[in-house]
Amino acid sequence: MVGRLVLASTGVAVLLPDFPGFGSTQKEVFHPYMNKEALGVSSRDALNAAVQFFSEAKKEGFYDNGLDFNGKVALSGYSEGGFTTLALLDELEKDPVEGIDLKLVLPMAAPADVSGTMLECFRSGEKYPHPFYLPYCYLGWRKMNPVLLDENRVFNEKFISDVVPSFLDKSSKKDLEEKISEYLGDQPCYTMLSDEARDWLFHPESSIEGKEFRELLEKNDAYDVTVPENVKIKILHSPADDSVPFANSLKLFDCMKTKSSLVELIELPEDVHDWAFVDAWGLAYKLIMEELM
Image (cartoon, helix red, strand yellow):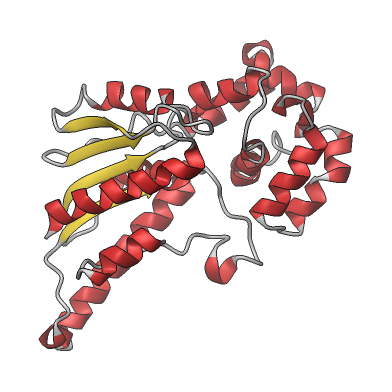
């Protein structure tokens, strides 16, 4: 948030979409976590609303008071925000926003490879620093396939009784993470799943449901997205990221560079996910100012 405030103080208009489950709807609906389509559509609608606001402001003479919009746009986000930045690129291809001149895209520490790199975080058996990721994805995706993703099919009975009510009560992310960590102890994340769901995780080709689960993961992959012409794309990521492995950005870069020569992968100083964002936003601020001002 500090980085956005600093940007805004320089005269750059900063847009923060009020996603479902955030802000005004926080107590009403679940945030569609890592739901590529839902986050992409929300972001596209927010961007369009901002452009319309500036268009109306110009008609009303607000520009006379120093408010101006030159049409130049940069997209940026860290972690799920980086994922959402990529999702927005696909939505803008399907439903463009008139009146913008997209100059720069900065996906930072984006979990772009959902069906590969991120899936391996849970199949590896190693302790994962943010175990809420798996049930949060479940909550973000369950409307995509409510029959497959019935909680009684996905999670084991103890997890349902001990932890799932906290999700339904919309407990804070910190409280949920503590509760899930307490439940798991030193066990791998997949122990929260039912036997059936573990089979989908490890042997997706062995059943119709496993194949459906695999297709759902692939539908939310964000590495093979549209790459606009003449737009600079700089992928920022720390190789030491312990939550969103650097392999996500390697795959994203390998895919994007086949579509554009303006794609660059920038390695941030080595730090864990929750601290690397400091260097990420510091560099993002510099890059955005260079491109937009």
